[in-house]
Length: 92
Image (cartoon, rainbow, N blue to C red; front, side, top):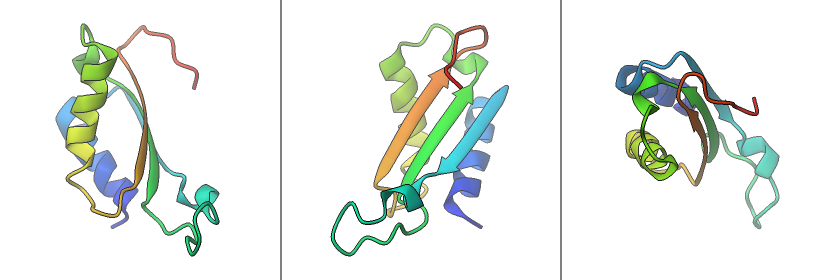
């Protein structure tokens, strides 16, 4: 099971999102460091809309998601987070 699949399952369990997308962007970062070939699961993006985020600050949303995702893998280097509550504008 891929890291993105595991993260998605954990986020669905924790937040019951209306919309969720977990995107592995690792290949886009190949060559950014010497010897890094873009290994799967190092750079992830989470786009999530969930009622659980209503009334939470942006920082609190990010912390909640990071706490959920960081336990999934030691290989996770970068995690871009785009959280929203229902009815809030998103760029995606």
